[in-house]
Image (cartoon, rainbow, N blue to C red; front, top):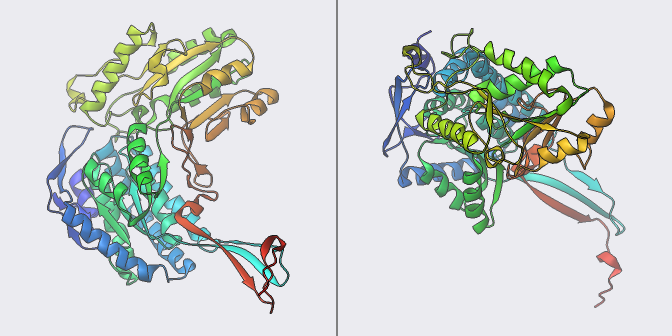
Length: 510
């Protein structure tokens, strides 16, 4: 299907206003050109937000919240259920648009839309489980309990690598919790945000929900700054680089606001002598080259025991030789392009730093420049042999470059190497030895928010809370009890006696 047909099916215009309060569109700022990394073609132009547009959206969202919060949570869940069904109808078109605009493989694009559907299903059930707790009071004839209430406006800043899924993780939970949402998508993937807004607008309109419950605000870094500094934004959920997250945290913290940060990853797989090497190889390759290495959960480091190092690297080399690089919409290809030429330059810089820092190449990299790679965004996945303490290893390299290193002793040495980086998102161990795996999962083991056994670092199920520690930001999204961050917590005490006993046995007689 042609990209023009896909855009038409998703009601995305060639010249599109980039700001919306639901079904109404506006935007009087400069234009963003949406250029595909697949072939370098212009997909469309999007007009960004001005301060005036921003104020308009905020006012609409504030007004919408006053009524939306009063809708019973299961009814809000019904809206999310209908949204999930609309996504099922639009899955093929939206998945293809993700691939066209971001450059990930078609299977990954469709998989990202499936993530949206899955979080909707999760949120529908959650809408009937927004529970508090009743506790025993120390005072007679008193009831002590807690409950959760909607926050207000939830701001969402998302990154280009998951241009639709990360937004859905936030909005599906935020909506069933009774909040309204304002979304600033990446300026590198504006068309995906417009398509998503059109889909949810259909649902909201069919249910007579007021403008302002779902808002989108396309623009540059200044839009994120407006949101971070705005006291009317009750929670700001930001996904992106550690540098961006630190800026957001400082701006939100200055007003004592709430933030949810999902930032950089520098994820490792530990491969022990007790590993199934075939499983380890497949997990490592997918983790390193999936989405062309542009996942926050991408595998960046392999920590391999010296006794199996030669055997494993031989298998790994053979696997890399089988990788096919090309148009991500052609399902025979494994690896698509980087997002843009700026990303290519950062990839090249990383290759140079590996050379400068004493690394050698198990699988050499390079930029592909033949006619079939006309966007100039296609690169070779590379594997570097390098010391674990090399500076480049401690930096998140957002590209398909895998760093491989040895450890010599027991599992504790490998864990120490894994934990020595500043990021703490995802981690894995490949081992059939229970002592090794349980040590890895213990509180003196992996220091990451995600710790896996015999699966890779990349890919997270909706049911679990997603997020990491240290410079990854500490936030949690998606499953488990991540919903609580989208609500304010209130403790309540009810006295149903005719006395007024005080806590801690304090006596105050008049």
